[in-house]
Structures are given as C-alpha cells and as structure tokens.
Length: 333
Ligand code: 13P
Ligand code: SF4
Picture (cartoon, rainbow, N blue to C red):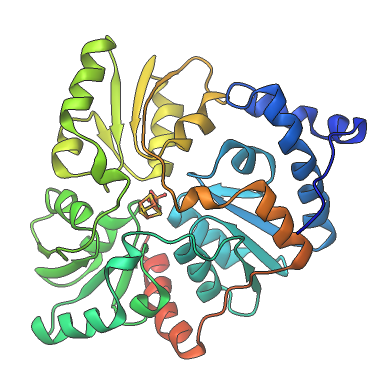
C-alpha cells in the first residue's frame, strides 16, 4: 500500500490547470485529496513510458486529469492497436484490458482492479458459442466487444455499439447470431432486413434499469429536453429518445448540436465528464452507475503504476483466435 500523498504547493502548482476541467463536479476539499494522486500518476507514467487509456465512463478525475487517450470501446481498441508505449494501463473494465492485450500481445497491459467485470461479458462463454454453432450450423456469429477474450476467440467477428450496423452490413448472410446483448440486438434489428438471432441471457445491468416512465417524467419537468440513449438500453427506451449511439456518438451529438438541456440515458460519469466541456449545455440527471467501472480510482491507478501490476495475461492460443475476430472488426470501414 502506498503512502497517502499530500497536497503541497508543488502539487497545487502542477495541477491547478487540471482542476479547471473538473471544478463543476469535484468540490475543492475532494480535489485536495485527489490532486496529489493525479500529480504522482502523471509523473510516474512519463518516467515509466506508460500510456493510460480511459473509457468514457471513468470518473472526471481519471477522464480529464490522468488519461492520455479517452473514448468508447471502438476508439480504445483502435488506439490500443497503434500505441508505441511499452506499457498500456487500461482504465475501464477487464474485457477492455483483455482486448488491449489481444491487439498488443507484446506489450505489458495493466488494469488496476481485475475484478472490474461486466454483466454482458459474464453472460456468455466460449463453450456457449460452440453450442450455438451446433444449434445454428453455418450461421455467422457476431459478438459484441463486451465479451471475454475466450468468447471472442470462438466467433467470426466482433462489433461495438459504434460500428454494429456496419459489421452487420458487411456479413454475407441473411441470418446472423448477434450476441450477447439482447437489447443491442433488438435495437440493431430495426436497422437491417437480415434476421438477427439474440442471446436471451445477455443485458447490461446499468442500461436495463432505465424506464420509459422516468424519461416521460423528465420530459414533463424540463421543457425542450433532448433525450439521448445508449443502444444497450431496452428498445422502448431508444424509441422514447431523440437519438441513440455509442458513448462517443453521444458525446459527438452534444458537441455538434449543443442542446440547451440534455438527458444522457447511460452511465452517470458521462454527464459529469461533459459538464465542464460544454458549459452552455445543461445536463439533466439522474443516471445509473456501473459498479464495475467505478472500481477504478486514482488511488488504485497510482498503486498500479508504482508496482507495475496487476498485469493482464491471456493464453497465446486464445490471443490468436480473438485477434482474428477483433482485427476483422477493425478492418470494416
Ligand atoms: P461504448 O463506449 O462502446 O458505447 O460502450 C459502452 C459500454 O457499456 C462499455 O462497457
Ligand atoms: Fe458492462 Fe454495462 Fe458496465 Fe458497460 S456499463 S461495463 S456494459 S455492466
């Protein structure tokens, strides 16, 4: 366990510019606790040639103050494939760190809490995919990137919420098994004439909690509210919204359209991360927290950099199999 770092004048001078980005969501007293960690992380990552990738659901201290690359699952996978750093520290959930290792097997990949899981990744295994192949012979299998490397190694191609439509269109078949997110599958079904076969056990424990009633209540309480939803939400939520897209697409929507008031039907940190960037937009809350994403903190990131662990290891045969399905995805433009 590392010693708790202090908020000294040196720390203040080096981090004041970062506080400007998060001051609306982190009170000064909390900042004095976080800033010393941020200061040490930013020093250590340079000394050790570590690049920090952060998913859009990370808290604002991680998202704005320590990460080198931020994005949705697709963006992070693309960046992981390109980076020249010796070590990649993934601030996100375990399947993201595994995908990074699959794309950069020669690099050291770290994740501060390997128990940061995902209800979607947990809903299906490589064995389930082998069983589906027997049940649906010859039907291509697309798996959402929110799966383990072992599952990815068994399928034909991956997709993310940012490229699902393009991946479906790229497959030369009228029937496709689209697993494991049944809600993403149903949302994609409205955009294609191909038959998408769903996996009944898969859903995101965060996005499935939203209800149409709560959206209607927000609309009634806020005139001209724009509602944007992640496609992991149930179909009726997407139908009740004005726009749906991956986390990166949702950010782009806010950046380009600048709605006066917006409700982001997704994980809570998204609104926190955008508040400082778009002061002209009012973010209407609440939203739901992903307990897995929230396991990553500046405290455990500093410990990871100090010890260069926990490291992510994936079996070399699994890497070979998973590489094919992830690389095929990245080839689809
Ligand atoms: P994207 O960032 O790819 O939209 O995915 C959302 C998500 O739930 C990742 O776990
Ligand atoms: Fe998984 Fe949902 Fe959390 Fe994303 S938000 S990591 S899909 S549980």
